[in-house]
Length: 474
Image 1 (cartoon, rainbow, N blue to C red):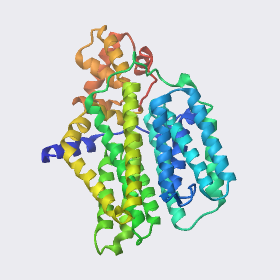
Image 2: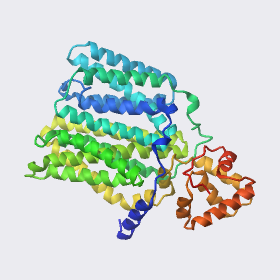
Image 3: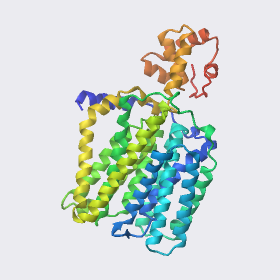
């Protein structure tokens, strides 16, 4: 990236102001909020308490459980996405797998039951992701993944410090599964928006650049874990502390300083690279605890970034776009897991070197993509949607533009009306349009007069948009 482009990118990030708050989390949407949170927590526990025996037919059983999970996601994407009956069937499969896992003695049969469970919740994960994208707003999506990342770090820390017991390995997963089943059978179709072809908006090609974020996160996670596992020196528990620290830092960035979520992409790459470098450096054993902490921080930022920005799909209400994004990520994850397993089985001594090489190649790929990322993310108009209470639905915006045309508003008055309907305060509207706050108030009074209304609330009512205000409405 050219120096000017880099400076421009940093300025854009620094000048953004998020309008998110915890008050935007809707308790009535808890059954749509919890499923993906629970599924990801259960998935993460495959490396700690809720895991199969250490190996199965000479393979890493934890890795095979991951493959079973990914297979379930791909089966749903290929054959039964959005089919409610399939969701109930997969929930039943997961429950049966869990019951047999509890009942069977340690051995291959018990491990197979775990694979069945992972397949079931893997399929459920697609339905949960669909709700995560299309039903939740930005604040709910962010809080959900904060909880997942914090649990991920906590369980790693507890496991590596020797804390164990039936409460963590049996009772907790059972409670989580019970809550998941309750949520799944409480889902209502009417809560999901229309994403059919007649209403969908075609996503621009530049929007597909968001695929870099989950590809980077999950590839680094799969192979980076192998580097950490192969490193016998250093305190593994500090990786969990690092992930918890990432959650706290993300809260400070998003809530205290109200900065853009896109900081996460840069922090993810920086901390992950630092951790991998220290682990790979010959003679750096004394720094391996620090390296694992840094890797944990990077992993946490990557987790938060990936599951938050995938919400951009909502902007287009497009089933096909959701399918392409999700299938691409799941397929890439499956291929990465299979390659990692094959290398571990065929050339175990070479695994750390292969993992390090792949991580470095991915980071080099990011450096190559920098101008493209600058153009299609940091210079794209939809980057601002992550600063709002919810992702903007482009189709609704277009419909409002057509209606606004009938009132003979000036181009600037239409711009102000659109910004108000996004829930932005006067100060941010003025910043976006490059005018004074008094100018925005003047335009708003004029457009209210032309629309024969008297307030922001009436403007929201005119367009049937839920009111979102920050207390300084024009």
